[in-house]
Length: 461
Image 1 (cartoon, rainbow, N blue to C red):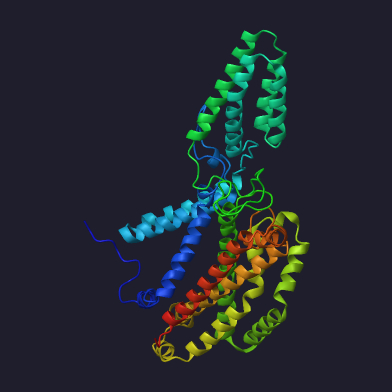
Image 2 (image 1 turned 90 degrees about the vertical axis):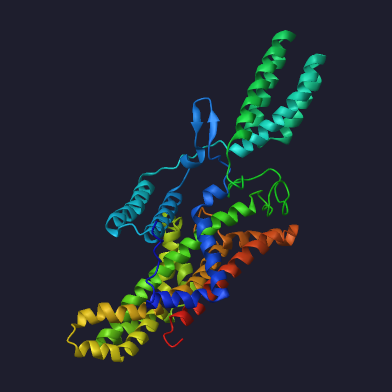
């Protein structure tokens, strides 16, 4: 059996830079933490959701979670599958000619499914239904003894009391209405038989719900709970819940996807624009350099937060529900620093000895540009993009804190905004602590990674 192929060519500049980067403990911790967050973002529906993965029904096996997946879920899973496939192909040494079409097809299939997919919005909340049916099962034990006594007045009192207690549960209210209808039946035997039928049916449905395979955290990010605000580990909430009873851990897990989407999207746009503008300005010089430098200065003079707030306030609502829109607007504001860094690197590299040697050998300017200049400035772009990603996380959290971020999706900044009143009135310290630690930790990881990446790519190190 042949040995797995290395990911990077041994002895190459990329392999040496990777060795220097992984020699730093801080860089390893930062990369591991960010990789874990990307994995959480891709698998968010399978980590925290109130719909089961699989459940047995009268019609057979059902997959509620897959039926309710959104376009973002499909795109993230397609991207994760493509990355995993690329890693395995590289490590196992499969022919790239056969593997490349597969790696291209997987994201395309994911994009196609996302464009065609319309998630099934089910009104039934499985975990809430399980809680309601459990309450009805406990109530049926008391109801059986009351039916045996034959007194209807305590029956009506018990039904009214549970209706008030569980007035937000449609499952409980429907079950109680059916049991209240039993009181119109004068024949005690027929009443008891009908009650036993309802009771057994409720127990069957409850057993199915309890036997279903759920995600690790059985709460949806937008699922309210009648218990309201609770602290960590209260009411089954590991990190607590907010004033509407929504699970904090579920909101943080699904908020990770928004943060990573904006950070990766804006970082990629910053890298592309910075690389394109910096290469053009540094390579051609003259009027092209002057015009592009003035463009960078104009964009740098713009107040970042003010411009983004103006964009967010006047965008159509359909655009404000997309995290990619936020990523694009942030990237369009933050690219000049990367462009100026690339321009300076191009100006320095143009006068290097190996460029002069390539010119003396008669290589064309196009070949020198593609094969010698661009690879030597890619490191600067990666450093600029990784450092900018931390700033992107802060800007997105600030916009969400002001209520101008992505609408309809949980966000770390929005959780912090919602924690202000709760922290003052209810001493809900957990609502500010956990999202605040996440924002701080992610920004710190991006900054550490950028610093260590700059050191690893420095040819003098």
